[in-house]
Image (cartoon, rainbow, N blue to C red; front, side):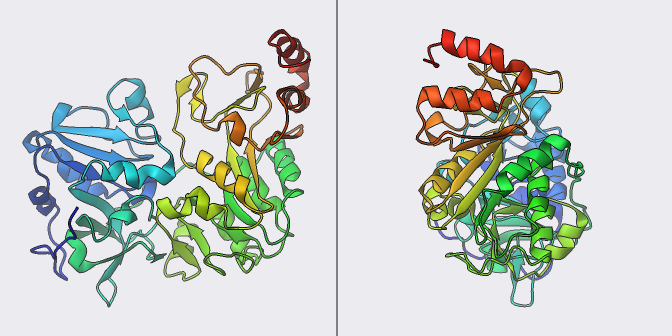
Amino acid sequence: MNAVAPAEGSGLRPGAASDVLKFVGADCDLIVPVALGEPPTLLDTLEAHADQLDRVRIHRMDPFVSRSYINGDFGDHLRHYDYFLGPGSRQAYWDGRCELVPNHFSEMPLLLRMLNPSLILAAAAGPGKHGYFSLGTNADYVSAFIGQVPFFLEVMDAQPYTYGQNQIHISQTAGWIRTDAQLPAGKPRRAPRPQDEAIAGHIAEMIPNGACLQVGVGSIPDALLRALGDHKDLGIHTECFSDGLMELANKGVATGTAKQQHRNKHVTTFCVGSPDLMRWLDHNPAVEMMPVEWTNDPRVVAKEPNFMSINATTEVDLMGQAASETIAGRYWSSSGGQADFAHGAMYSPGGKAFLVLHSATSEGHSKIRTTLTPGSVVTTLKNATDHVVTEYGVARLRGASLDERARRLIAIAHPDHRDELTFNARKAGLLH
């Protein structure tokens, strides 16, 4: 790919949304950021003119909003390629109306470069007085293409102006528009349940002061971040920055002073959360938005001592294989960065990786199983699974034999299922 020359019409004044059509040719691949980085008006424009498009493909992860093109309404005129199912694409995939491409989050720029993409469509803030836009809540995979592929931006007041390697000079754009579009609504934060708080308590005891955190989003991570309120000098090097991490920073618990990379900064590759979080992010120099090929690179993660990775899974078998992207054998999301951080934490001096789950489903079925549910996909290999945590305790698997793994996992399973798991483990030859 060649470096991008200043585009005709990409001046200091915003253009019209229809201008984007000038840069969308036949048989081309367009890229849209994760989650809140969606440019809604630009996507509306493509959909409104879909009958004029010829074999255009949009590649993105975790769409929050369902759209006609995601649902396959325009056939080969405009198609959706997903890399992590979100609330806007899950049903469409189940109905066979869009594609899902397996990936590790850290490798997304590598995969997308293979497409030789034509254009990036992204939400943004700015431009600032020096002529730079910010990708706001995002750096993710799109920031890796700055200076290599032209960007068409939708500037939204709702997008915070953030700093890091997500800055785009106006000369690197094909065009831009300004709208009053709002960010798509995410899931409301759910109050932690007793199981969540028990899991959080088990993990908090194992996290030392000065540790560096990667934490997912949800009720268990929220409970954990609350449980860390008395810790000191924690660092943040995470995939997704959330309200819980903001609260940890506001309390002075997360300072980043013990980090080896981007010391005193909170590092992330995208953000999801409340309007309060968006206001906090705006022009906040403590937050560094970095490309996912750097944040999630296991070699980068391993350089941080005492790196603690905490991610959710849906099922674990008695060998330690974790299925984190399917539920009851049906696709729900994708791999994300779980395996990236599991490997990075493994090589971090003093590092630990935790996979968390409730011991049983709401219907009472065990989430720790002799074998995974048929159709389930292994996200984290048994060799990379370090600790598994339920409300009943912690099973340390790294370096443990298959017999030891089975015993430790059965010990943290729901008591109603331990006898059956023990019987089945013996029958399968896992227990001697």
